[in-house]
Image (cartoon, one colour):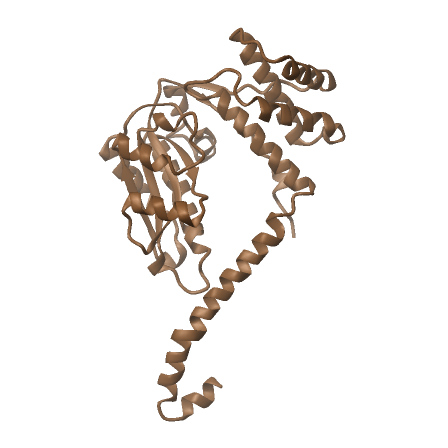
Length: 329
């Protein structure tokens, strides 16, 4: 069809018009439908081991974060803790899974922290914890980290293995990083690869306390510490620079830059915590209005940052092993 149109007068112009106005938009819509249908098909399937493991990791991380909050509230997360304990008790046949070992260790740490602070837990919870300890007497407690600011940044000039291993998400802040620190970190982060070297990322930096809190009110993952975040980077991608069939590059490029920026923050002794942006269209539109960003930019992630406290409580966030990640082909 294309070759035929090219041979007739004005055929090339007609084809280019039809392609740009009809075929190309339909191809992009088809790509969106394809991705959406795949997400719906598989993300809603929860009755499998992998989904159970993810659910346990998420629940345990919520308890970890609660244990390391700068203004820790004793007795927090009791329904979540009860759910974790019940899942551990129901799945004794999965005792070799790292998710079970981590869950048991965190349950024991939860008990230890509350005992040390003379906080009495409800009998229903203590009974569950006792049952877990009886079932898994040999599994060790998993305590969260407590570091000084000097200890936290002690590997910033070390070789990459130690440097990358030492960077953790921080939720304990004492003040703002200087404009010079932030600019140097972003300049270093800009060394990151980008698809076809398009360099689509924009960093919107906010340091005004009121504005930071207004922005965070639209994000669901900062409860318990968001009010202490002194500065915020809202990472966006310019959609005008994304090619057709490249919609995944929005988050691919955004993700690459975000991780590199967090490493750069760590190098310049700035603590940071990534805050995912997973919002329905209505909330996305509201935040875009608050941010006053151009319509052609899409929000990919928020990063809270600042100077850390002198003593930092850090969630362990133990990672699964390479044997569960690598698929040799």
